[in-house]
Length: 210
Figure 1 (cartoon, one colour):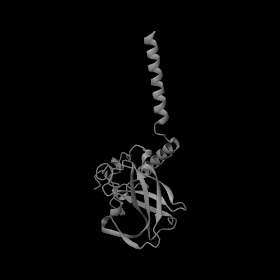
Figure 2 (figure 1 turned 120 degrees about the vertical axis):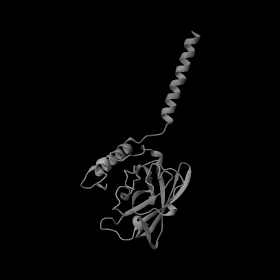
Figure 3 (figure 1 turned 30 degrees about the horizontal axis):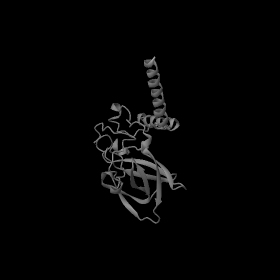
Figure 4 (figure 1 turned 90 degrees about the vertical axis):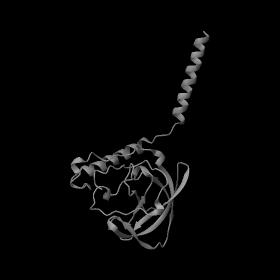
């Protein structure tokens, strides 16, 4: 009888422990994950489409698809934009020893894994029609030349009325010059160097392009 009661107590404690773990474990936003997974499928469809793929045609037959880090909601963080009014236009270095005019639009401040960081959000000084609200966040981190493109990655942002935004590193992607030398791409400024590994977004496999 004692053994049965002991087993019942142990079973009850185990069930309570499981319930507590499930209840207090990390929340998963299924709608967000499904939407991001769909975006990743669209990216691969774009790369596999010969009519619009940025891939060098010489490497297209060997392309097996973009590789991604697992979706991790820890890399989706709240951030604050501090606008930089009347910022001067400067020549931002690009690949192939080129430059193009940009200006610093804002500083973006956020907390990631218990530490605070700031990055510079850039705006093109010369924009094509339809791109008036486009902003670029280029950055480098400790994954470069290991699991991601050596020159860094980008996150696309848009101008808006709110200064509080969501910064999602799961949407970080490689510039087109990572896949084809005909493209000229912005080089992230030194102040956008993150001293941590951002294991989120698109990975990089050279395919002999560089």
